[in-house]
Image (cartoon, rainbow, N blue to C red):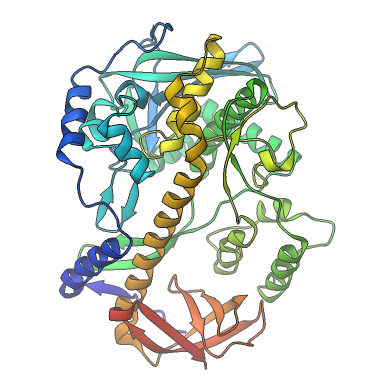
Length: 482
């Protein structure tokens, strides 16, 4: 197995950029915002605090919110603050108030419905909203007042919600933090009290997730990294703080779903339970990876003990996509009790769940948020929300499909480029999927899921494969059993 560091060098940069653009063209990724959309966004940015309905915007600038994001992020959807509340905790979660800037049925509104989500390429971000909003007026940047939707969720000592409220407010983030610096501060004991509570609440919420059978999706990211002299592919294991921070978003989404289900109006994120045969396929793969999976241990329990930094574990964790299929959105049309049907639940969360915490990057969040604000205030849901809800499931399905196709095509191109000069070399991996014409082999290194032709190697088997083709023009990489 080669240990050579594989990357695309500077001389290949122009070809890669041209390739990424070709992928965007192929996937119909919008190139630019129309002039009327840009003009409307600039006008909205100049008046960031319009009155919305009869609910007054509260002044919450005294709360020391902070944002925690990847380094260099400018579209900041969320800011968080945690404090003690008796024997429990108070979570205050500020979400960018995008509806304050988007005029219903206007040019900007219609453009966001066409786009659906922010799209990411290795060399370019294609935002859902114009940068004058997504990276400036609507973003929760530090040191400036911003309109926000603030969730206040009081938890008991175990981390269960006991009281939930949501309101429009004015906030001021104190700092823009990156995951790595927060993790370092927590590890060396220099983190402030609110960040220490983030870890404490995150651990408690994780314990509750285990108890209800939720699936921890700590999937290693297959990343395209700008390496200075070129690009390279790598698997990146998430930091613990990313999970704790995600639990705050998950908590908010669960509270939002419960609010909409009780009121009988809104939209929730749904996913059917995995099929028994999917679990059996994973058990065979685990055996091939020499991962011990006792029959009395659930998948949800097993993956929590795996280390994504270990190649075999990383390969297995990547297979969570076998279980987490058919996720979508479902409109809530009538009140539902605590025992909601499976069609309104998210199997990985093991509860009802809604997207409300990333409105700068995801269209559906704006609608879910407006439903919750109306329910909390005891007011009717705005007409523009009720009109838009029925078409959202299909719009979001199409947008998510395009995002996945864009991501896969860019990775396919990168794999072909970095491996082009290595045809004939051998690599070690494990068979993680069986298709009609090939087996998918997750290589231990580099971070590539290989197509091995012909198939029949055996699901879960550890194999050595030889690279026989790497064609950037077709974004095609193919291996054969060595």
